Length: 187
Image 1 (cartoon, rainbow, N blue to C red):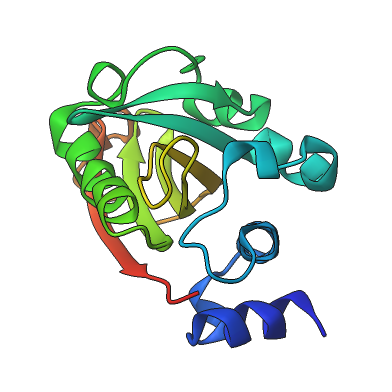
Image 2: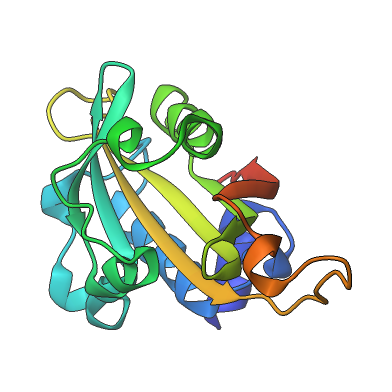
């Protein structure tokens, strides 16, 4: 069975809801290691060797009271964000208007123990980015309590027509969320 069909079978959503094949592979792997009868796998269930091609694009976040700490951030994501995030929190790393959107879906994944898929268009100083993500809960210490998130994130530049009224340097003055869509996955 292909990864696309497998994700669709597991989630009950259209295969194109998770655009990137690497993100579909991460959801498939998460579901496999979770096993039957558990809301989420534990971190020790994950084997980095099994996720080798995905490692540059994954993050592990600790679920804190009201925030999330980046425990591990893949090198591809450090490059995408232009700085290392490991050790910082979501609140420390992003402006509130952007971080609050991610926090909402991370909260959903951690409080409801459900995986979430999201897509966002974000204006940055380097141009517009499309960010596709999956947020997958992990339960390490107490069964049913989500204390960590496994996230996969893929980013790509989006070409768009510049306004004839603005110089390119004026077009983006700060990072801002253009649009954001996310949905829980039923796995």
